[in-house]
Length: 78
Image 1: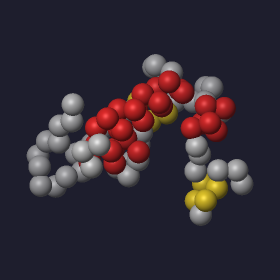
Image 2: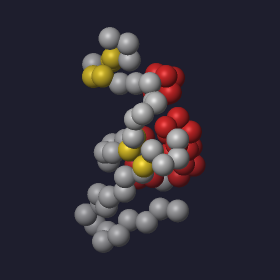
Image 3: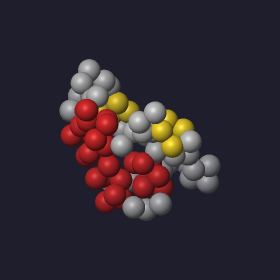
Image 4: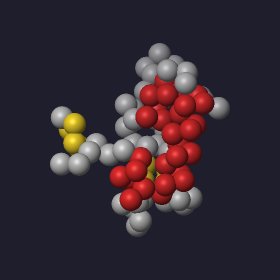
């Protein structure tokens, strides 16, 4: 039950402990990276994405991008 709070979840330490051999994606629109971008918290989103890259390694961590804003044809973040 470690890392369980109403739903299963993992902190950075637990992710790092079990990261070997895992391919990671940022996945869903409510994820840490996507939420930061959506809220205009670009620095925090980049820090989170960098943290995942550092834990899982280059070539095994991927940023999932999707346009979830129906009012804009293309959402662009830099």
